[in-house]
Image (cartoon, rainbow, N blue to C red; front, side):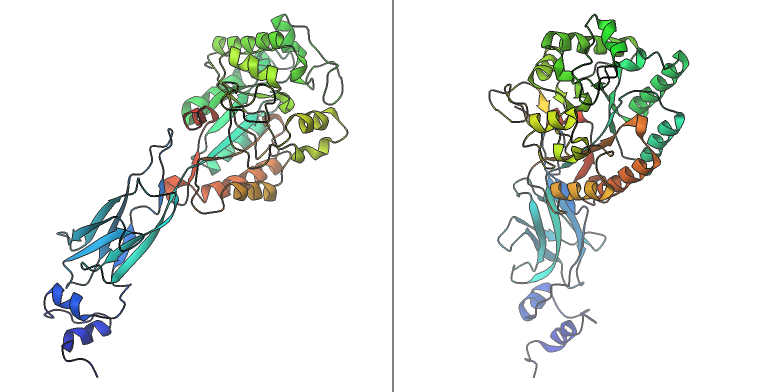
Length: 435
């Protein structure tokens, strides 16, 4: 039998809050309803993902929500994570709904709950969950080994951007584009125009990629080396181990690359990747000497197993020990660039190519590497996932692979309130990762 004190109002509450008009003040309702009513408040969050500030991302300082309650409720208490958590009283607005904003800057990076409570805090009327996370920074990079390709390759790269509108690419462009005798002046201008469009229209970064092509090296006054190869000596210098050059020679090559960029209106590059990932400590020292802030030559060499039996496998497996799919940006040791060595490190940020390039990883492997870096929940610290491709061999198969990987990124974009993923260029990471 119902307690007489509960009367018809209590009976109405038991049957889905029908006919509450005239049931008395909110204080009466709060005091007489004993059942759990966790679904009374229909809560809508402005965002379900909130990023923490880190130097690049400003971060969200508040969680904002709106909710409704039956007409008998004129106020409620809203708190975070528990009844005793950070909270605030809220009253019904002129539109009949309740609106609340609570500070989240003291919250950890994890999954949290926003609780709507009765004003006496004895009952939970509704709740919603949200994630406070560090950012997942997605770097998509290209290695311009040469520019001897048709417009079909440029069109595929344009297609990737159309499929992923928020994409920003770090283009490790080629200074030897301007010295290659197989590329006509008209073609050089066409590709230069294309790469500038990527920068000016889409925010791409123009970094530097150097293979030791003799037609470039010889323009600098440095003797071209071809015997120190990671594949075979064909006389072109393309497969020369970049670290075979002396530090002074490397400095000269890098200064020449920057001069070519300046001459052709490509800006002043600050990021670099060595051809074949063959950068050692003296390459990094030369980068520092010529004003570069970021290197991305570290690679999880196990994915280069197709090179076993050749110098590329031997070199990368010897020099990038310990670099894995989840290795994050660090400041490298002057003695061993594969290791971090704060505070006695080189003043250049090493951003590992942890997702390798599409020639060496299947779509499934790229998805797996993504999930190694982001399991779907909140991240405790800023995290980088990098994938990319070589423009001169960017086939339709490779395009399909990269689209698959970026579809996964797009499924977690912060801009869409789907997760913590944010497309960035590689030099922007210097705002996040500091010595």
